[in-house]
Image 1 (cartoon, helix red, strand yellow):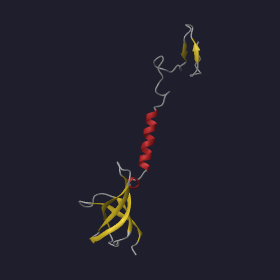
Image 2 (spheres, rainbow, N blue to C red):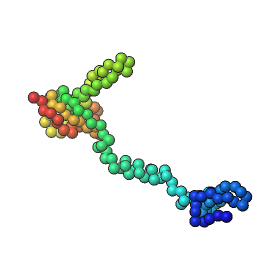
Image 3 (spheres, one colour):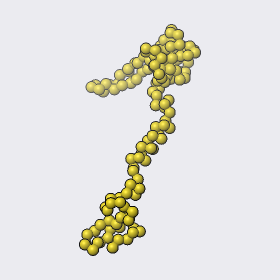
Image 4 (cartoon, helix red, strand yellow):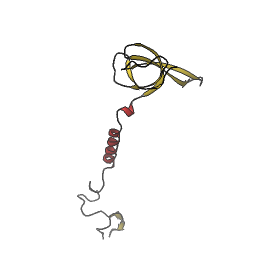
Amino acid sequence: MTNENETDETTVDESGADSPIRSTGDNEPGVGSASDQPDASASELSDTDASASELSDRARRKAREGFVVSNSMDKTIVVAVIERVRHPKYNKFINQTKRLYAHDETNDVNVGDKVRVMETRPMSKSKRWRIMEVLERAK
């Protein structure tokens, strides 16, 4: 005794065993068709692809703030970025300074200015950053 309209109930056969009722459109007994069960991983992949394409390339680039320590080169400045890092053994905070070479197209940045730089394509052997904005001018 099978009811073709209901698909989630269990009924008792003539043999007395409980079995789930399946729709009559199945190709093989006991196996659901591909159209009955949508592939969850395919929908998840399409969602992640859409979200990855929505994020722009610039949103994933690193940005740092620091002070200009040198502007003697043409269209290049040196920015000192100071990070406070905890020492792994002694747990004391240490100031760690990195010197980044950044592209300055207009040559209008002076020593002592606070700037924000963004990661970009390699422009020379050591220049991998460019100026986004000048946050504070030197006094």
